[in-house]
Image (cartoon, rainbow, N blue to C red; front, side, top):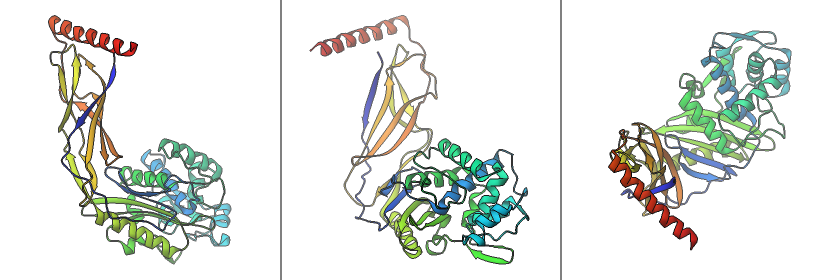
Length: 385
């Protein structure tokens, strides 16, 4: 009979209730990049119009096409009349100001997309990759599903106003973390402070680059219905945070709320390493083996963010389906470490067996079988009561 085994662990580190903080943003989220821990959230799963935040996924798809070898940075795309009219100055939209029927390299279009937030750049990239905006929108939703952006829906590559198009703060933070982690060769574009095309110089629209030390990305959005939004990230003393704010009334409010959340996060929380890679976290029982249990280890550093100075404690439990049955291979993922901060689940991490356990001798297996039989009688008696 297989049961879910739970083992409690004692952790000496104390967590804290950080000073009370409230963001003026209708939707807001602050996460620790390394652990994925949520430090602050407000309506983080509520849908809102993304506007130009859509261009984060447009850029990610282009990055992915380059990594797959289907595209290169020096490949050129032709600017169609549709891209020129729909995404350019004629549409009173943010634009890279590419010329109609001109040939523009993918790398220049990426800078026009990310730094200048050009709708014409977004449409040209979409048409170059998929042939049309509609086909690219299908690709966007397919890619969103692959990235587990489960509560967002995309209609076009530029983020034009459409009631069907929506995202959530949590999905945008997840997308930002993916780009930072999995697209290191391309992430630098988000930190570039200006770009000139067609002799038109434009600065990066992300205010955090100028207002927050260590800020290096990502994107802003503005929508008549949804207000002003921002997805940003910054690093301080080796700690990276990701912030999302949305629904604000002005660009100034957007900049202020993004900055305040990041500064509060860096000031109010500190990272604590609980286990280093390879550390023994606990053990799991083994049925019919030479040894009765096997040590469980973590393959990566396990770190949590703790608020500074408050008495709320961390609790941890190991969960595995067991007892394990011999033979057991070394390095097998058999359990999960769950850590709570107060009453909130802070993180989950997989656990592996540190060593192998061979099948035990006949006497050992008979002894284990006797214990299992007795356990079954006890469970049966308890069930009948």
